[in-house]
Every structure is written in C-alpha cells, then in structure tokens.
Image (cartoon, rainbow over all chains, first blue to last red; front, side, top):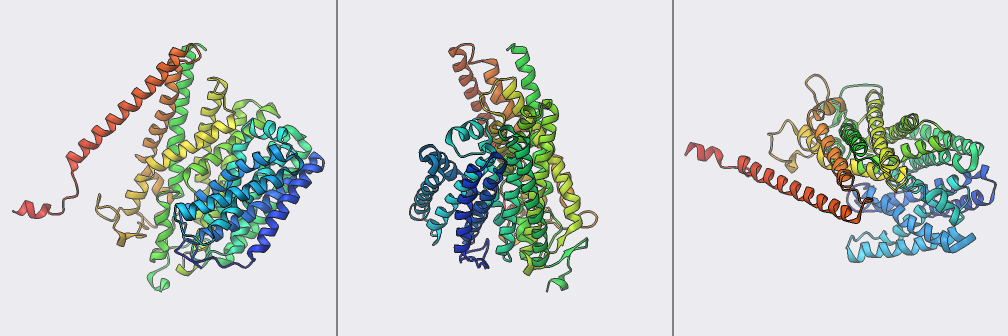
Length: 267
Length: 304
C-alpha cells in the first residue's frame, strides 16, 4: 500500500463494486424513502447521505492513494462543488426523477473534470476519470440526502426555500465535503486500512445527520427533528466506538501515557 | 442608520474579529494543523516518534468554515424555532461547533498515529485527553467571535447574506489568514529551533522536529505558548484589519445614501489596498537591506 506516498493503487478488503452499489443504490433509495414517507421519516434521506458519503470516501481513498497528499482536502471540496451544481440542476428540471437526473448530470460533470485533470493538467492518474465520476455522484447524493433531512422533500421549490435561501446549503456543502475528504485525510499513512477509513466516514456522516436533523426542526417540527437527531446520534456512537476499536487494532500500541520509544526500541 | 452607531458596531466587529484570529491560530498550533502538520506527520517515518497532536482536519479554511457554519446553523434554529435570545443561541451554537470539531480532532490524531504502525508511533491517550479540550476551547472562542461578526453584519449592518452563509465565508477567511499569517511562526521556526535561525529547512532535516521541551517531552501546549507571543496576535491583527477595513469603507461612504457615495467607497478601498502594498514593499526592501541574502563567505571576508 502506498497511501499518501507515490504511485500505486490502494488495497481494499471490500471490493469497489460493492461500495459503489451501496453508495448509489442506498443513496437513491434513502432519498426517495425520505421524500415519499411522512416528514417524521426524513432521516431516511440521512441514511442515504451516509451511504453516499461512505462511497465518496472510498473513491477519494482510491484516487488519493496515487500520492495526492495535500490534494485530499481539495478533492473533497470539488466533490461537493460538482455536487451542488448537479443537484440543483437535476432537481430543477427532473421533477420526481430529480435525484436520478442530478446523478446523471454529476456523472457527466465528473467525467469532464476527470478528463480535464488527466489530459489538460496532465495529472496522469490512471483511475482519475472514473474516480471523479464516482466522487461527483457521491457528492450529489450527499447534498440531496442532507437536503431531504432538512426540507423533508427534494421538491425543488421547497429545497430552494428551506435549504438554499436561508444559507443551510453552505452547512451541507462543508459538512458533506468534510465527510468525504476527512476519513482518508485523517487516516493518511502507510498503514491505512480500508475498513477503518470507511468507519470514520460513517461517523462523520452521522454527525452531518445530527446537525441537519436539528435544522429540520424549522420545517418538520420537533418530533421529526428529534427522531433525526436520535438516529444520527445512535449511528455516531456506534461508529465512533467501532472506529476506536479499529484504531486499537491497527496502531502499534495504544498507551495511557509514556515517554518516547528509545532508539533500541525503534530498531 | 446613524453613522455613529454604524461606527460603534464596526468597532465591536473589529474587536471580535481580532480575538477570533488570535484564537484560531492558537487552536491550529495546539493540534499542529495545516502548515506544521506535514513535518509532524513525517517525523515518525524518519525515526522521530513524538508526543505532538496530529490534528489533520484538512486545511484550516475548510475546518473553520465547518465550525462556523455548524455554529451558525444551530444558532439560527435556536433563534427562530426556539425563540432563544441571540446571545444564548450564539453561545450554544459555538458549543455544538466546538464539540463537532473535537470529534474531528480526536479521530484525525488517532487515525494518523495508527497509520504509522510500521514506524512504531504509539497512540498516547493522555496526550489526546489533555489536548482535545484545549482545542475545543479555542475553537469555541473562534466560532463565537466569528458568529458575533456575522450576526452584527446581518442584523445591524443589514448584510444581504443569511447568517449561515456569512459565517461560512468568514470561517474560510479566518482559516486562510491563520494559515498564511500565523502558522509560519510554528511551522518554520518552532519545529526547527535546534537548527541555526534563518537557515531554512534543509531536506536532510525533514521530519527532525524538536521533540523535547525545556522539561520533559514537548507537546502542543508548548507550541501554543510560543505562538501566543507573536503568531497568534499577529493573526488576530491581520483578520481584525481585514474585517474592519473591509466594512469601514461602506460604513463611511454608504452606498445606500447615493450612488456617488458607493463609488467613493470603492475608491477608498483601492486607496487602502495601494497603501498596504506600498507599505509592505517598503518593509521588505528595508528587511532585505538590513539582513541581506544568506552570506556564506562572511567568516572569510572577516578574516581577510
């Protein structure tokens, strides 16, 4: 493995197709369930966003393993940048098929940016085009999913009024972007493991559900907001504990306190 | 609005921004975020394991934008849904933001250390337990001050952007200024104190950061103590000036009064930028004349 180093793909315990399926199918299913069910069940949008963010984090992990280094945060930002454009475009023209139209638009935008990065800027990362398509799709689903949590629907007029006009789109942009970029960035190093990175993605996405769930009290009432926050907190607590377990599994040692290892110990 | 009230609000905004800038820089220094982070990350790989917090939460601009927009979102919900007084709402919003930032800090330092297994970098739990509250405390101050700036701008000065969006933008700004202004004093100086001052970072010294303090092992507190002397305050002044001067021109020359006033504010802004450019240029020329380029042959000249 060469995470954060030069060249080479990342090794993975979960195959990329599985994660893609979880992200795309889970994301869209969550968004549609959150849209069609009563407002109290808008947390389904959050569950969709969690799936999408895990997928995005995995795509970032694969592309950033080619030695992106400080480019990891940038790629998370571009994911949500592409996502906002695609999401608003798709929701405005797509009607009930809005999320799917957004998803396709994101794939096209991602492909164009991937080709530009490889052919024009000359980054020369073999999986760049595919990874950008995936990252754009994941970013779009994350934005729509979290918007469904706040607005209870992906109806364009409601999203514009309840999410964009009052500025919560900035919150969704940054919290979704951090959810996608932070897991790999926080685990950067030669002994990075896929399951630990993805568990961190779940944890960060759960925080996004909690915060957007709190914001949902504006339009969906306290019951729905309470349920959103509860679901988010449960997932967060589980994922955080699990992440800590994986840290203990992967670290050289987890000590309560101690001095630095001596030169002999390092040999 | 009365010009005098506008000036008063502007002064408050400037003060809050100055505090936000200073605390933002110290917050990033306790956790070694952004600029100094690459060397903290590299050190174990060069056989220099350390007890320094590795808070790799992307760059400072995104992480501060996250704190500030989370705080603003929570505060706006509390104000409009729970009809809480704005002051309490801003405090609670900042508290939530500090907690969220705390989880980002903890997961990144644990994750980065765990990914250095082959270099035998341990995860020191006491270091994480002691440093994370400090990081959260600083991030609370930063978020609260940025929220005050944004709130006064939206409510009193009538800025058209919603609070969350404005806090997001000011969060990016304070992070960018902290990253460019304050970090230099930690990344370039403090981490390499054992080498001659001004010698630059030789490639062979990469990762060889100072790991022992005056007494015991050096940690993030020691670094924020050092940066509180100059790096933090200078970041505060930089951010305070940015916020103050940026709003000052439109408060003095209010575009709402007449279109000519609006153009005057643009002219005043350009004049301020020109003055700062010339001033900076003068300082640089003076510093170059006083200290000059690195002179390698100085001892020989002296002996000749």
